[in-house]
Image (cartoon, rainbow, N blue to C red; front, side, top):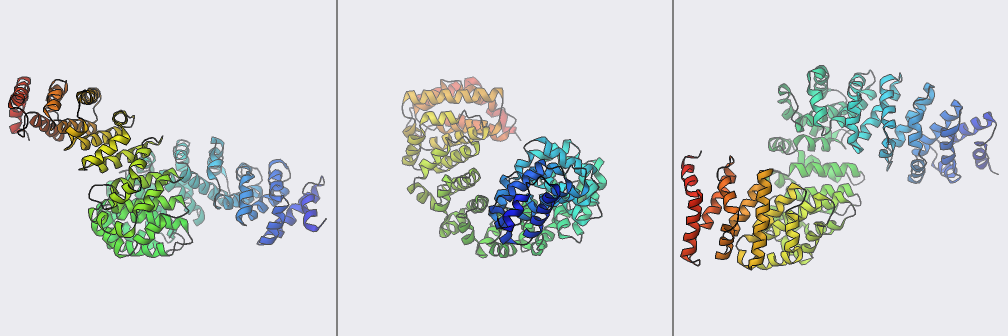
Length: 624
């Protein structure tokens, strides 16, 4: 038996001193020594050290074992995988409640290493409330700055991975504890506290409102002052907190002028090594869908600086993801911003990122392409030249739902009628793919699928509309019109509206089909009278408007139903767009292009007048 095997064997000795010596020897032998780590790992020492953490009562052995596990976590990916699978993280968190301060500090240092190691399943640490409660108790009562720092770091990471933890920590008093740690004499503890506060507030209306309240007035003032702190991390976290409050519209009025001044400050942080990975993400959060702030960002040379970061991101996947996310936001609203991205020659690396092995990068690249797909100019030029259609199309089958959602949202814009890429997508089976999305259990994918079909049908040729209906079926369309998701119902009605535009006679061409459609429309009106959703209501009325451009059979079918009484009701609606849509319906029902018999037109006009349409129209002459 060699020395290495002997030491591992001694970990199981009944002699306390022998066990202590073995644990200490292994810890010292593997520090900074990859070869030794590999040798001991092959002998199963990681599993044995974790067993010691779970069962041994001797503080000294626990300290040595905890330190050794942290050292293994700094080794190869294989060793890290073994540490993860052994459950060491959860055990170390439990040990942090130990009554021996040295045990707690050692455990906290090792846990910090494990928590931020590659592929560590951080969510597993918070499977139950127990893990969260340990974190809160350490923040509240532990005397060690190191331990409280680690507790704040773990809270921040947990909130990023599992957003529902934010409300739990908030309800249990986590925010005041973090505010207290924020003013610690230790800069590391301050930074950890600010990171946790920012994570806690992310997209949380409730928590942002609390921070903006009178109760935490002095704390918010202090956070605002930190935008000029000497530490780049403190500046970044302070700006991130402010950006969260901007997004939730909770930033007090007196601080709102500050927001514009902070955009150049974020961009300057791109050059700070300690925060350059997260700074683009904070910029994306801050400018969001605010056109004015996006202009300020581009004027502050955000795009060329993001381009430089993208070039330097080949070995840093998180940086690449965050840069792509920032570019997607900056290019989302204004043509000038998109022009800067194109001139910086960023479309090529963006399209290349669609093929990244990292799903988060693929999704971020999709979102960049979607920002460009909002522009008619780029749909016809830049995106075509960059060859974006096929890579996006292939991502509809991606294993990651996040990527499927981002890709399908982009493709929905690409298949609009004036885009040259529409033909490419259709030639590669795009219609079938979009129909396939409608069968997903994920409502966002169904929505993107129906949105894509709506855009395909927009001013499309009758042959294309017939092909869509053949795949979708009339029954399938009607089923989508009754989906539990209001957004899907709205877009399904919009699709029906596009089908009916210019091609009523070809697509609904027999009495049975028309009667069924009339019944479906009546049902939609009845539902709106009970619980109105104005966007859905407008689409229902415009469906009638387009149906009323059909033949005598279509128009008389409408007149024989309850639809005219609903239209009469909505001509008196408080919403101008709803009233206008109802008026168009009345006009179409009483109008003839010359092919409809005059007697039919007259009969419909007389009936509409008898119902009171003329009277309401006359009263509208003074409508504001």
